[in-house]
Image 1 (tube, rainbow, N blue to C red):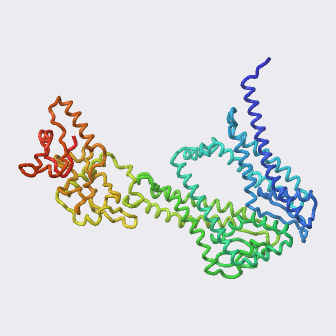
Image 2 (image 1 turned 30 degrees about the horizontal axis):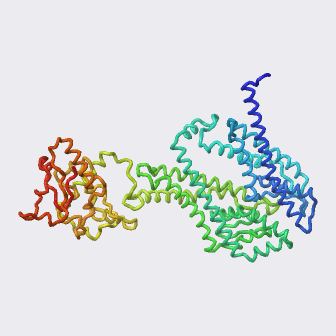
Image 3 (image 1 turned 90 degrees about the vertical axis):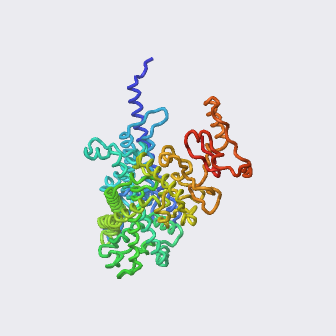
Length: 609
């Protein structure tokens, strides 16, 4: 028996992968075409007065499916005898074919279990070729129907839409990497993309641009909804007048639902200022409706404003681009000055302006692209211009988002980089502070605390004990040394610099022989003179059991030269002997006397060994 070589096996697997990707593309196109055909067949069957047979329905379904890819259709049966173009693409229908092509390319580019990852370029080409084969068959089928596809639009935009969806699917299967660019791209662009900083800024700009476009679409949809609510009677009359039976009304309802994204884009273009065309001689803007509109009888077109100059209510539509610019600025400022990062990692003003302008440019490009596909000619006469003018809507979006977004982004950046004393940035450390500076700050704080304790400066501290600094009163507590009243949390925790436990190398160096945090007799008993830095240590290191264990260990190491651990008196009366009250010398530890340290205060715990 002969055994296959590894090279032949690899070639065979590569061929099988390409064939599988080709089939995936054809199946994706078939699923989209089949689902739309079933929907058209249901409407045709339920209609009491069908005007064509099953062949005409299949051709009409193929034409509508091509229209969902952006293809232009031609309606030959008109009253004038001149074929009329139909180029308004229902954007809701575009989602199905684009998602199917994207998913087919993603599945074809993902590695299967037990097999290596297929070539990305091969998967893209195979899926696109399989999908376009079905597109060519559908175009041939719809050639003799009532809605015939325009051959010039099959390459652009149909092939471009399919290729873009397939490329996005392959990119998703690869993990959505941002680079490297192909070798034929400019070298300067390749070097820029290779930098991590450039990729982060580009990602932030894309996110901000997407947020601006989303707010524009939402605002446009809100404008359309308000206008339809004001003209609900006209919309109802148009809906009932187009069809008298329930099957026809259902078809009109489906068409209106598919055109809702188009209406939202029309509202966004209206809010931006350029408005939209209602024929060759009429334009609707917030300033008013000029000319005589050629408006078909359709429910969504009842939202068109009346003829004449605009009112203040029409001018309120300008709030839509303002909201989009503010959303773009907010998303940019969030990346420019993150709340959980120190000031050293924040962007500079120049970087913030640059990213905001790039985001505004992306928002303008997206708006121009969407408004270009939201309209189109519906005839050869007055309706040859119908919908938003993309080359006016795009620059208008750029002016709005750049003019308002840049100052807003800078102001938001300054607001987010305000004093760390504000509540939401109080716990963020400074990354650019070296350890030496932090140690010096702690030493200065410990020295200031000891000085205040010895001087007894407690005026005005009683009213601020336990208060937290709030965002509406950031000035509270300013001007006081760390550890003063007002800096302690309401839960009873003190600032680290004012703790009664001296930090290593800080308190002992600042005040040799002094007890940091000791303010005299009566401190720590809950009296009126209680200070935040008088809290006793709460960690187990200072408990009696641990102190006794340390003392016993030191005694064993000294060979019995050290005295026993001094027992704490059970009752204050035990402190009084025949000679009178016990003084500080009675509680002095031999180790403290030998070292020359002062005797501890009887009202406070003994020194830590």
